[in-house]
Length: 463
Image 1 (tube, helix red, strand yellow):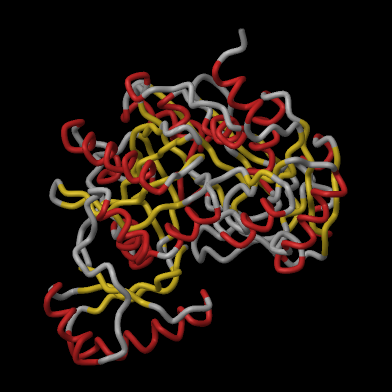
Image 2: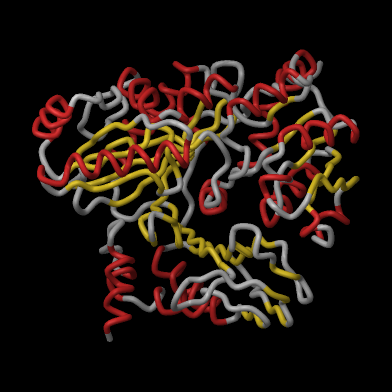
């Protein structure tokens, strides 16, 4: 007799070819997961990425447009046409680009393709921060103090809401993300100016001026909870990670598990996240993001996609998250129960970017020399090689350096050695900055919050 998961897949979303609607290291990562599952892959590229190495290792490669992301990796019609021409049965969006675009997920399904991610309705619910907060509150997930409705236009009502929350407050775009569309308001006399500026920023960046207001937490950590769900009413959470080391709201270093958070505190939050997924019929992988301060968790948003930092959870949980995501899209029953989830050791990830380590300005050019570390507990996810041309058109991420060790202190030591053994020449990278950060005493002791890195950089510049 076939296993239950095989029966489910046969009755559900069978496909044998996946179009990878992305580029760079995540295209390589998805391609590897597909091969291990016995699936064929279709790579797409822009004109700037024609020579990317993952194109030659895919079963087929299609160039879908010019170098500009708007005319290639964000061109929905071109991607759907490519899938049709290549005979793909599914699309994996990776992260960024169209990965959280509900309209694209819907268009893919209408074209007869499986979207490897949640349904369009789940993306829409969780993509709007107001509806997401409302759904989380209904599921018992702790949220940042503030109403679960959009801010009205009436100035007096806005002032009353701010007073009820208590200053400082933060204004956020309902459709925002990536650190954009938010503004801290420390006191009442700058409230209306902040509202006007953020509304306009939200309208331009996200196509909607809708805003909401929450309490601004002064010294929180950024904690994430990873979930995996199937189409059969099963969901688990895979532990937690700390992503507090941020510059301009962009993550730089991530680790799992988050240090110093005891199971009794995190357990009910993780189970509330699972319950929220079940309530909205969520499928695939997702990440709940929280601010954590004074022993309390506050939900801020859910990412309805694969995260850049998923490897640290893979290293500590032993679960291949990308494969689990693909299997969920195929209709398989989740082969993991909550009691099976463990956390082994500690993991760090450093994002290696093609940028100046002092100014953080992007650095394009040809990689003339590349040496990557190897050894026990070291993993490198990358798409570059000696001779690779780093394009100025896309995100500056060129590699992710991940380490795993029995303890946090050992993992930090292993990362120091791994960074010392990483050499990239021909372009500038942030490796010197990362090396210095891993020598910092407060970071080593876990005495940091989401504002720490910005303060640390200011002190370095002033020295």
